[in-house]
Length: 273
Length: 295
Ligand SMILES: Nc1ncnc2c1ncn2[C@@H]1O[C@H](COP(=O)(O)OP(=O)(O)OP(=O)(O)O)[C@@H](O)[C@H]1O
Ligand SMILES: [Mg+2]
Image (cartoon, rainbow over all chains, first blue to last red; front, top):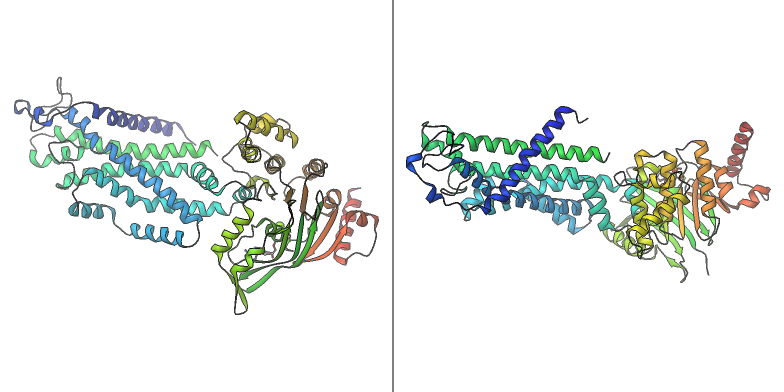
């Protein structure tokens, strides 16, 4: 396995992921005042010298806003992925291993959260609480805990009856080490990689969707890829440039993260088998 | 000092769809320090269950273990099953146990003993090793627990020594190999190294040669004999094959339908002293036939 096409896909998606991460890390260091960027003389320019990706309806540089727009999802996405994979792995391990009320409590919580429709619940939270992308990411992270916990629980249960886990117990290896190292780290790592990149992509998708819907996403004049695309409504077909680039960026980034997560997990699986 | 292990009136029962099933039915046996006890018996006679009870590893939710397992590390015999009776309650004609409390009690009793006082080598060596860890890393886990004072390099050196002691041809290479890269016989040697690196007083070997070629089987049996020659360890050796047991053990018990039908010293068996249980006699006859066929 792992033919030429897969290698190209791996390195291609990896390059895009690396680029997004690099921009996400560098962007906060660069100052940007959205009000000062307004310049109606320069509005709706196409790509060219001075403004590589053109300008929007208020004459703001699209490339700059595209870069600053990563801040709307980058750290929140990492946060959501972190919450979902860590809590999911831990609760899944408990649900798969523990007996008695601890297990009952965890399984009950997981089932409860699992019944919530994700996007609708996030919108609901936004209408009740003061919406911020951090809150949205936190909620998204929690909403993904059950699906991750479920795959981990199945893994723990399946491995629990494996001869080598029984042998580890007989040799006196500690339960914590067996669960955390032998099962979660060695066996479930590819699963967790897949899930983490999926959750990250989901946060970008949610940010886009909420911005497009209007009131809940990142609000103008602060840039986000979602509210940049949402500008189409005000443009009335005057120019496509201001929204084409963010739209492409969203699609490419989500696709790249999903593909890279999958292929990285595949490599990890193959390397250890 | 008393016996290392004294199992008395061991009973193991499972609730199945067809009602209550007694798979070990009043089994008693003991093991002196430095002794090798062979356990013989046909498939399903309760050999594995009896030894898993000693290890506290009887699985299967409804399994109930009763009787006494007296284990003496040197400070006097301790009944490993003593507390368990408290969580078993009769309900109608069946016994019901509280699984969670049972599990907790087993862990409390066995946690200090697992590995250091006793451990096991199971059949199917390939599945008994972690597929995602190198052999060396697995031996080192045992070394780390047995000798916490060693540093990383010390552990690696000790692991290679253990791999050499179980007569691996190229211990350094095996150290960095994964189970799937080794033959079945090599996996079993590695497994023995992982178990013995824990320096247990009691080693339980459950059909450790099943699934290996005849020549490899003979090598593994010879390896056990050599590793135990100093009599510092004791072993319960389960087998289908009476010849292995005659070669390795000081005494044997023969099990059938969950009961011990015969306990006999190997020397007596070889000398033909005394009357044999008909089942033991048939095992011996079958082995003789095999020898004659081979000769
Ligand atoms: N969880 C369980 N529930 C019900 N019956 C069980 C369970 N586990 C084992 N048994 C039964 O216990 C009996 C004894 O099993 P055991 O594994 O001790 O046999 P054995 O002598 O080791 O056989 P073998 O030589 O095939 O390994 C068998 O009849 C088996 O079907
Ligand atoms: Mg068995």
